[in-house]
Amino acid sequence: MKGRLAVVDDELTVCRRLAQVFTNEDFEVETFCSASVFLDRMKKEPFDIVMVDLRLPDIDGLEVLTRVKRMNSDTEVILITGFGSIDSAIRAIKMGAFHYVTKPFKIRELTSLVRRAHEKIELRKENRKLREMLKGKDVIKQIIGKSPAMQEVFKLIYKVAAVDCNVLLLGQSGTGKELVARAIHELSPRHNRPFVAFNCGGFTEELITSELFGYEKGAFTGAHATKIGLMEAASGGTVFLDEVSEMSLSMQVKLLHVIQEKRILRVGGIQPIDLDIRIIAASNKDLKNEVSLGNFREDLYFRLNVVTIKLPPLTERDGDISLLISYFIEKYSALFGKKVHGIDKTAKDILLNYSFPGNVRELENIIERAVALTEKDILTVEDLPQDLRKLEFDTFEGEGLLPLEEVEKRYIKKVLEKTGYNKAMATQILKVPRTTLWRKLKKYKLESSPLPSKPPKTLLR
Image 1 (tube, helix red, strand yellow):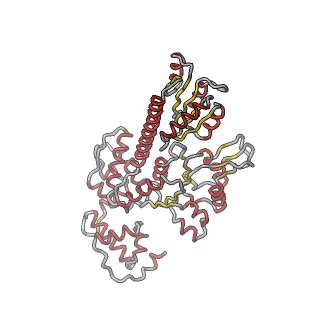
Image 2 (cartoon, one colour):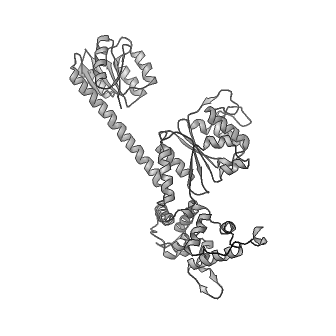
Image 3 (tube, one colour):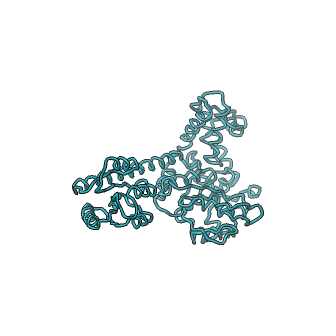
């Protein structure tokens, strides 16, 4: 990219000459004969390099250097004077000047100096960009998963992070929607600004309004001072609205107005406040279905649903459960100062075949509890919650203990028989997604079934 260069000198011939030289060097050059005019321009659009005369009629060159560095510390300043001295040169360097030259200067030497300053700026930008990328990747690393379903999620995170649009995250509770929202923020151009998360579930409309929009002093009883809302506090950054489907319809109207106008009005306020935020919303419900039911505004749905990322339930993430078990064992072993370094096959098989209605959050809680309470270096069945331990001892009459897969196969077959092979009802009873049931039917060769019949009335209650 072209560097932006300013020449500030009260000698018009110097300004014209340097403008010609550095325009030919592929810089965007602006010249100023007044320091005050230059500083006003600098406030609006910072320059990469500033060449400023030490002796100016309105403001001293060293003062210009100080103000420039205060506005933008990345700007490199080269001081020029016809009254050079070692003392002023040393002082300028200590104050942050890139270099110091005296008149008359040689164009070739000055050109070389400016190129070095520009190289320093570009190197600093590259280093900062690399650190930002690594920071974003660190956030991505917290989302464990090598399954095809999660690889698709990662691709979308990287794509949407670079585009400053609203994002809608859909997925069951515990699938990691806030982690994904944070990853999008950290990989986006807004990463240096705040990330603010707010859960819309379980709060009254009045509380949501005051928390998101803030309020003025005296707006209501107890408002003893003005409070800045979360949206205003997130200026330039990202606001994550979890469980957005739990908002009342009247609150949805307020949120829609904020998104459309890019302004908020504090409770009790009369002066609108401009907003520059990105909204990432999340829901564990199908918002399109909620729209059809009249529970969610269609216009707000389209405002939030610029890009949708659907997070798969844990049971649809083939191979990820083993990765997550290992990750959480390592995480909580370090946190609790223990030396747990694995899980035995029986306990792991139970977890691999469990339906995890609470998804990743439930698995994490299971491993956290197990690591906290175990006195062994390997987790076993005894370290799992009581309801999971029962799976190991499940039996069929007269047959004694059976392998876990055989128990699961027989139970699925039994449920299918009881429901008249109604797969939709079977998924409700088993509490697993339909895709999981299909995979199990294929695994246990249960696809070939009798023609579906009407399930018993007792199961339809």
